[in-house]
Image (tube, rainbow, N blue to C red; front, side):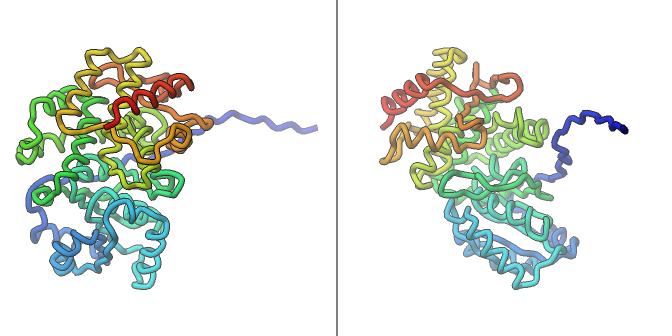
Length: 369
């Protein structure tokens, strides 16, 4: 009787390294930008939120000979319904694979259009133009995109790298204070997980001085460099890249419970403060470092705030929907000092006991304002 031999094959994701170009400057949307876009000889679709469309849409569409698609700003656009609506419009207007998508707005807009570009006709070229500090230091970097569902945040999406990310600092000149806090929250997180020098710069800088162009350039550049180094070391997001989700287990749970009325930046700040406490509670982070961390967050005006409908059981359920969860258990990234995360055998996150969760809830409620 004939026999066949079988060889064992170890499978791992095959991910092609990204080739995204980054441009940071002031007033980059001159004739050269239009010329570079037109050189691609593609039909251009410009997607912008309402506020950006009113200020910049007509001017850019004229320069680029583009079609304008307006979407609402904020989390309300990050839905499967909005993605389908845009797909139908694109098909109706006969956008083919020779298209170029430009996404202009905050992180929610770039998330939505990144996901759209990755699946429309199996992928069309994409350029991101973030107009908020949060978008510049986080959302537009690394290729992640997603939409939300009623059961959780960022649960449906892809990894799809844009051809370019263009950051024009003039957009920040009219940024509301709330948006500054949203962006600063992610910058502080970057310092906590990997860049103690960035954290120290934030300690030395008064909030009112953040609009200094030189300081902004240095801070944005540091965040881009850090995030790209981490993302390119783990393109499939199965290990080290999880450190970029520090504070986000708690944050995503808060956003879901608040029905996305709590801003992402505020939720991340609360998440980072809470997960710093958790790192201390687990015996990894010293009391001195914990107090230093909490002091800076408080100095910048961040507070632990809980949604009105906050309850330990529903919050626990929301935490298990985070992408880092495994076997129905929430997992957390932890630090042992400012600028260093714990590897946990390559997973870079860990679960906690039920008693630890009880103490975590007690700490959050005791510190809520």
